[in-house]
Length: 242
Image 1 (cartoon, helix red, strand yellow):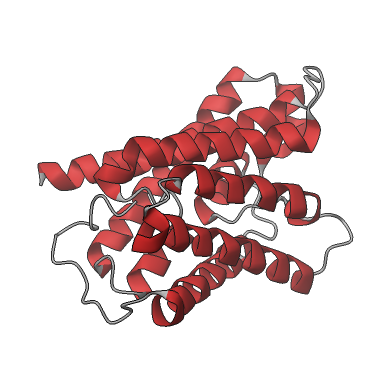
Image 2 (cartoon, rainbow, N blue to C red; image 1 turned 45 degrees about the vertical axis):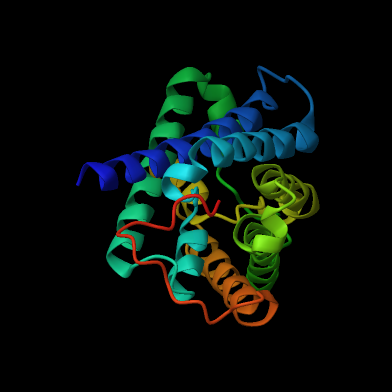
């Protein structure tokens, strides 16, 4: 029981790292703060925070910090269904606490101008555009997770957290102006819950989840050397893989 609580605490705290840094960076670019940096600063904040969180907590929980990642691990047999649900609850909790913290720290003008960092699409983006971009961005993210932190060939390079964080950074640079580049239902959920703003929210679950599952299945079934390796037997995710 204590082991499971530690694992879930790591997931919640790691998700807090990502969401607090990302939301705060977005709000810092808004008036009256106007700190500058723009999209580059936002991408770096997300990427660096995720890199550090993965390195901090990968040995405890596997460092998912994202329901799309957890569900990718679920469909490839790397986590049990009951624990996957608990992971997602912990991730949503961490994201919500991060959003609440930012709401209490930043001036209301910045919060309203930046919608508390909710990933939102450009005015011209259609439903199909949002789905395609979020699917592709999350596919690339989960592919990087498998390639650097699960595949033994990639793990020998020892850049798992750094490679995963860089993927988030370039995804934001590429897709941020189009969809907000969430890639993570928890990252969308926290500020949406605090702001009570649910427009487009369903797409920010469906597209990342499907993109993450597709990437996990593709890498597991085609790119891994031993895709038929049986699932781990531990109660929680195979610690140390990430």
